[in-house]
Length: 452
Image (cartoon, rainbow, N blue to C red):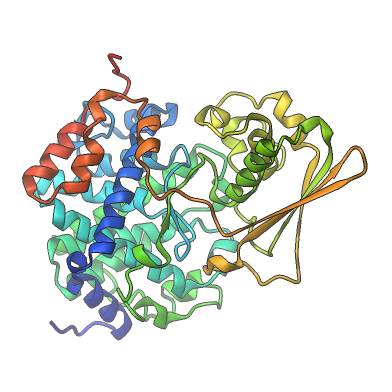
């Protein structure tokens, strides 16, 4: 296929629609694992207060074949993409990807599931398109550099819109030119600010991106026009969003070799809070097992490489939602309770017994360390703990903790509801259109109804 469109945008579109990840068993296995993890988060998130508000506000009673995850309702596909994307991210328990510096699956899978429910695609086709959508999102993240996120954009939303459009374009076997237009329409809707972290609006970003990506692909397929050169134009995506740190060649460089879902791969969250707080969570749980008591601690200082705590915008949270973005609280809860649960991060006020320790913690940047980047080797945290007896403890965590198997997480997140018990095994084996239809039927049940 050839295109008369701008070269980099056309090359990006060509890479998207000509990709065939179905020949890579490692990528396919990683995708199935990620889908199970996402569904755990979305089914649990379906019962969140804000998911209900969003569904009611956008008119989830509209007629359609798309399902609301963890609900018996069916609705319009754009509404479903929005609500399910929000539900998947509302607990901040969903996966992250270093190249994106954000959460790809909670954007791409809701868009694909909503579209597939309307049109009827095979499970194999959906899985392949998810891998391609993630690849597009990750490659854009690499091409933008670090300033996009650090200057205040939420990459889950800004890159997710384009990743979702790319996944739909791949699924529908769109032409190069049609795909280029879809990507440009998605790029012009690319938005989302980190200032919303700790509020109801952060998970809305994921749903907004899923809906906008799906809408963009559908509009382009229907003949709706738009700029064909969102990556090449002098006032295009990189010039607006990269702040001078762009590396445009990364968009297609080594595309699929290996797939980004394989290397660096996704991190499946072990804890239901902001990813950047997970290293201190692991340190706290480890010190709990060593027998360290909170009352013995005088003060804690967390040292990060520059930029590593950009998402941790809260030091003194008032409730559990804000606490997801507070390493001081996360460490305190992990040390005192020896675990982090969903109820540590709900809408109730934070517990004084946890905040008493959190207020004794502070943070600093190690300016001698390399600035944190998409390379996981640049991520670390050091905890320097001064005890009341005058002695000191130091602990260090490099990289990110994560899960290799979300099976137990799925059981916990779905409250071991037998209605969803067959979902993980079906995702592991599904291939046909009938299999995907069966999955949608299993997911189209009320999560709140648990007869056990």
